[in-house]
Length: 66
View 1 (tube, one colour):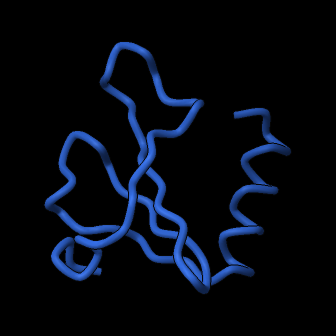
View 2 (spheres, rainbow, N blue to C red):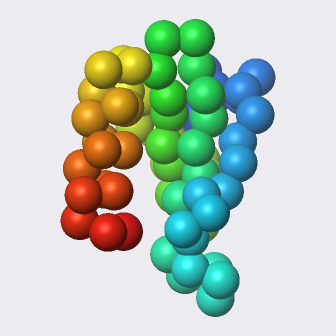
């Protein structure tokens, strides 16, 4: 999704992001899911996931221990 369409959302950095700043992911809660973007290039757009896809992604990340 183009970054301009998500200008009104509140982004937060993932608690699992690298403290050195080179592997940071930001997440925004949406009414029907979530958006994920690279904090180093927020203008590049975001991946928007429906609630079921977001829940599945979080479960998969937890399962592999990330």
